Image (cartoon, rainbow, N blue to C red; front, side, top):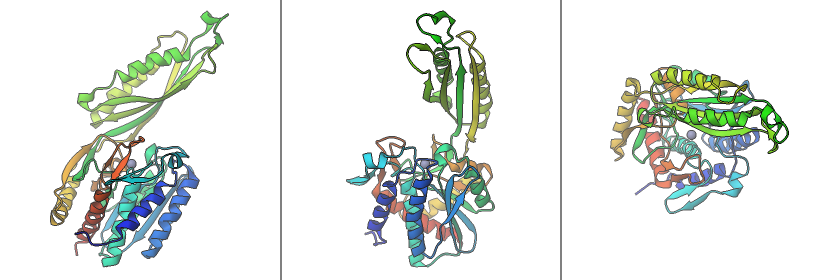
Length: 373
Ligand SMILES: [Zn+2]
């Protein structure tokens, strides 16, 4: 039923990208992945431009065509450390592909390449397509957000190819995200002879962690996760320092203020006397409520889907993405346009292979529809 548009080649490309470890901020990994992309784009008459942000982060941009501006966003970085691709290599089992970043977001990167390739083969539509492949999305896009905002300006659509939560789902709204670091200072002492003189930063942090988690309100869509901790030096020393990294998710803008105040209070209050704490960080992505501009864009995508025999449904995602940043600027944005997958940020990550082909088809046809020709 499916015409051959080089599906095998798309999977081979995905395998090559997954084989390259690209933890956020790793320049060598990004450059290697960029070389793979550049070679693919060159075949379509496109150039890959390297962007180095002020903090030294590496991102790539490619552009083609004239007409209404459409931005395709896909990130190349993953949450997995160097060595993961060798430890847990790309593999296919049944209809699914596995490997670090296979779905989040290398499947999306390949979907973009596949769609471009189709348009190239069938004739470019009258639309100006800008692709941004960033390397710091998993950090909250600290370095690429400026390029991103600049590119999104006056775009008729920003299409983010983060993984789809399901074959027929397109993300129209997302939770907001905050990242914080809590640092506790105490007083070091010999754990035997001077125990009473010590002020344990680790113990104080433990109390604070419980208080942070107690702010979670699942029903209201507010969650706090202390995802990484550290502190102390050795067992026989009362520890004078400890830290925790906190991830916050909120559904609505109005939930941010009270949570920030509560976090400040937790930092200030102490259970272990003579300890002190500082809280740093903030909101990295504002919540993306279902805006009218996004819903309108969804309805035109829905129409294209119908023509292809795909019944699309709008979806609210619990994760944040670059879509939050762009939509906050008032640009019509849709997200979750990559292939369907699951198990993200874990060893269980997978991508549905049939959905990769469906999304290539959908993206290509939508880009045509946006050309208005
Ligand atoms: Zn992602």
